Amino acid sequence: MSNVTIHAIFDDEEPLMATARTFKSNGIRIKDVFSPFPIHGIDPVIGVPRTWIAICAFIYGLTGLSLGTLMMWYMMVHDWPTDIGGKPSFAYYMNVPAFIPISFECTVLCAAHGMAITYYLRCWLVPGAKAKNPDPRTTDDKFMMVIETKEDKKNNIESLLKNGGASEIHYK
Amino acid sequence: MSNLNYTFTNKTRNFTYALMAIGLITIIVGFIHTPKELDVNVDQHTRIWANLLVNGYFFLGIGLLATFFMALQYAAEVAWSVAVKRVYEAVSCYLPVGATIMFLILLAGQLHLHHLYQWMDPAVYDKTSPKYDALITHKHGYFAPAFFWTRTIIYLGVWNLFQRGFRRRSLEEDLTGGTALHYKNMGKGALFLVFFAVTSSTSAWDWLMSLDVHWFSTMYGWYAFSGMWISAMTTIMLTVLFLKRKGYLENVNDSHIHDIAKWMFAVSFLWSYLWFCQFMLIWYTNIPEEIIYFQDRLANYGYMGLMWTVFILNFAFPMILLMSRDAKRNYYFIVIVGCIILVGHWLDVYDMVMPATVKGDHQLGWMEIGTALGFVGLLIFVVHKSLAKAPLMVQKHPYLDESLHHNF
Image: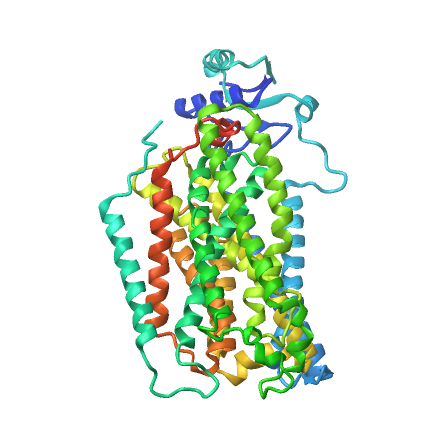
């Protein structure tokens, strides 16, 4: 049996959410939702798994902290011990308060850039990438739900969408 | 709507009475108690007076910054917090009690019952006296009793007037509704923020920084302010969670809790930032007249362990423990972190007061813990009494509906 892709357009996010909940309880999988703005609380409803970006950020931050510490230790203590304000850097720990702002900045720098780059790569938002958005109106004021299903379930889904308040239904 | 009328049960009431009794007995024994060995520079009752000042200031800060938070919510027309409005209102009701205690402690100093404030002694301005101090004499204009007391009375009086006004209008709004009171609160909130922007700093200079009268720091006012703010947010959070555990505040959902926890997290960072800025700049430049503050703490009187404990408790713990979204929505977790934060900030005030007053004689003993417990009891008593006086959810606030649907 052939697969069919349904593009359902909604005028508001509330009916879309309600329909998505009905689909979830009926065991119908939603492939994706396109929306002009982030809809709070939609992730679990349409089955988007928890993001790993927080764990990535932590690892990037730790990397930044280590690199920053290494850099300061090498510059200020190892290679050319520097005496600033009567505080010679004989050992790293002796002047640690002076190093904290830089440690902090390196952590933030690496965490923020690492996170942004990971995000772009993961979503493939690179220069020259083709837009995946099936309908440009979803960047303006329309909300779209994409469902991939078998031919025989089509009618059932269509009636659920119509009851849920979808303003247009297209088949691809 | 669920049960809106909080009953201050006998069990809770007796618990607060027990704590207050412990505090009262500790204070009385503290005044009778004579330490065996006495530093020549320290009066016999300095320890108990310093304790009263630590607790008087710390708990005043909780009531005061709850008032500040209330004004902030009004001025910014915040919607989400309306569901917990009665809770921070109740915490702010400690302000009159805290202000009275602070006033009495300062008055006792003026009557020379204690000598926590070196500049309150007229002899330091007298050239013929052996206690004459040229540096304090330079500051005589600022510390002259007439000016000092005018300031103190203005701070305490105006804060209390604002707090009473907010509370009165909030109760009135329950009956009348409409937006007239809402806009009035907004204007008054903005006015309070302007007044508080100045007085939060100057009151910290007058009451705490002047303990180290030769020393000054431009960061001090904000540092004290942020410490009080985080204590107030934590108290609000713990009160909300207590009420939820008892089955009240059904409409307060995880998103509200998450938002208050975000405040705890953010203000912890604000405090850490100010604490560290003050410390690092003074430590790095190492100018004698500035470094004396940290020299007293880190070297002369042996507060080093305490000072770094305070920094770790108030910075590292909230940062690591409250960072994740799940942690901010886990009630048990927040209670534990909240208790750590409260202890940490109490110790911070201890670290601000003690090195300047009891100097090397400091100890965290029965007197410190007993007095603090007494004040905890008083705070819980006042807050819960205020909670019982009004419905736990505001009735006709314009943003009530929006707050009840708060979800993210």
